[in-house]
Image (cartoon, rainbow, N blue to C red; front, top):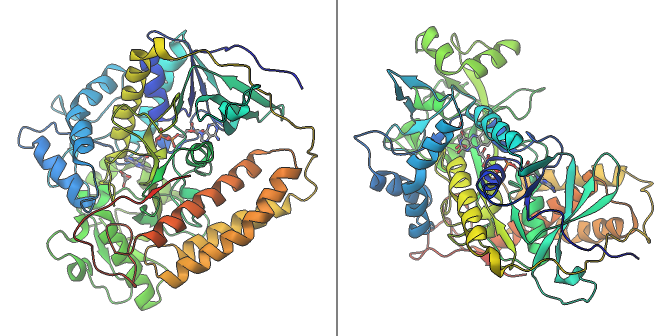
Length: 531
Ligand code: FAD
Ligand code: SIN
């Protein structure tokens, strides 16, 4: 077996979404950066974001208000220092995006601020109802124009390279880059670097119904966990209250801003505006966990397929102007939101837990930084406040880059690393195993580890995971890797982390609601899993 020596790049960034590209652009002022993406460079959740980015920009609003709203939504599990760190940096992050050319909506020159659930003030900057696409495009353009950045799509990282992969096995958790499957050639390539930034997004696709894109399979979380990093609060899976109910289009989000601009929820059978029963004060603008549970309760209690979201009482021009993308998409499906209600259901939306990081975006592993949805920074606590996640990507992407640059001289060059070993595997002869297990995981996670949980259901899920584990590891050990297989292995790893964390939390808080422990403990504690 040959050795892989030397390094092609100073820094490896895994992920080309908001977190990865923010880090890359900052690093590229001084270093050469390689950015890897699974599939297209626009394949992450960033490109799908609708509502916008939260920032205190209105004279009547304060950082304290935003901090309080974030902590109320987060059920007190947030880390106050992190919350302050992120929220105080939000206006600067928006300035930077304006410099990069993001065409945020404006009203008489000022940024237009919309409103979303859990926010006491209007503070969401946005580009119509397709903010993520505009942000992704601006970041990508800047990265493409930067000679210090190499963007490499169609690379599925399999695992991080650590001291265990050294020629002279060190057993250390020091990270030196990653092994990545080149999706076109089918070969696994070793990418080495002095510093690695993990920005591989969330694990939403572990659930049958999710607003997240196909590639959100928790690869970053699973890779860091296998390499020895702690992972926290994985039971805090956020469900969005309003995903379109449609038999063909399964994961189209109807932004919370529709409720922010007056949209109301109704039971389609009784016609009741039911939020009054669940949160009479905040109604449709209660935090997401409350509205998602209300929708779930109505659907289960009345045996419904969906509930109705209605904004048709607003003038048609107002609706079309604020929500052009959604309006057009729905018209193509035969729904006119200016004239009648939109059928919606809750669906998984955001992974609040993840790889534990500090304010410098450092993980437990030397050489590995992480930012964005694959992390648990302390910002979101038990439930993320709407539009705080893109913000977290910008703040922590920059923090990672700054910290790497400040400690650059202490970072060694990678040692000799063993290349990927394929000598004992063959091509798979039973792809159906992958498909079957993917579906099985997503189905039992939806049914047993969803919006309302019980210990019995969680134990059933844990049992399924144990059964599948042997099968998937056996498959992984015998067959050449493919993206589907990499994702299946990571989905199962993440399912295990979610269920283990959920079983550990013997209380109900934020997104973790269990009928066996309906009370909230007086003291909020993170669920930290140690490999
Ligand atoms: P992503 O943007 O998901 O990027 C992940 C990157 O990692 C991708 O480039 C992917 O290819 C790469 N990757 C993954 N696995 C591998 C691998 N194995 N090897 C190599 N590369 C890999 N948040 C808000 O703040 N405001 C909103 O309005 C909003 N709306 C949303 C709407 C939808 C429909 C969804 C799904 C999410 C929304 N969110 C919103 C959440 C927000 O979009 C995400 O949390 C955020 O974009 C995550 O950014 P990221 O950089 O961490 O990861
Ligand atoms: C939305 O537009 O409803 C999503 C906002 C978010 O996830 O923060």
